[in-house]
Amino acid sequence: MTETWTVVFLGIIALSTFVMMAIQVGAIIYAARMAKRLETVVTRVEKDIQPIVERLTAVSEEAVRMSQLATQQVERVDLLFGDLSRRAEQTMVVVQQAIITPARESAALFSALRSTFAAIRGLRGNGSGRPPRGVEEDDALFIG
Image (tube, rainbow, N blue to C red):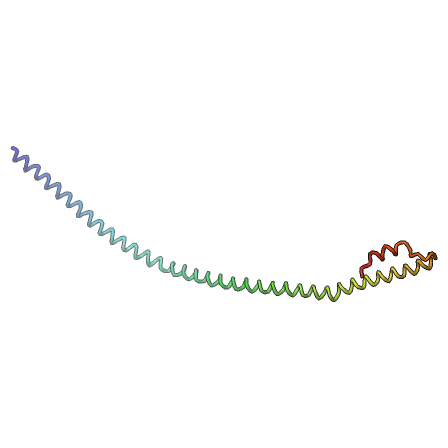
C-alpha cells in the first residue's frame, strides 16, 4: 500500500509540475504579446510625437530669434533716448545762453535804470541830497 501512495504522490507532483510549466509558458506567451503591443504603441507614439517635437524645436528657434531682435531693438531705443537726452540738454543750454541769460541781463539793466531814475527823481524832489528811501534797498539787492 505504501507503493500505491508513493505512485499517487508522484503523479500529483508530476501533474503539479506540468500545471506550473503550462502557467509559465502561458505567462511567457502573454509577456511576448504584450511586448509586441508595447513596441507597436511606442512606435506609434514616436511617430505622433516627432512632428510635435519638430514644431517645438522650430518654435524655440523662432523664440530665440525674436529675443535677439527684441534685444537689438531695445539697444537701438536706448541709443535713441540717450541721443535725444543729450540733444535736449544741448538745446536747453543753447536756449539758456540765447534767451535766459540776456533776459536776466536785461532785467538787471532795467532795474539799474529804474533805480537811477528813482534816484534822480528823489534828488529833484527831495532837495536834501539824500537818495529816497527805497533806492538804498534796491542798490543793496543789485547783482552786477
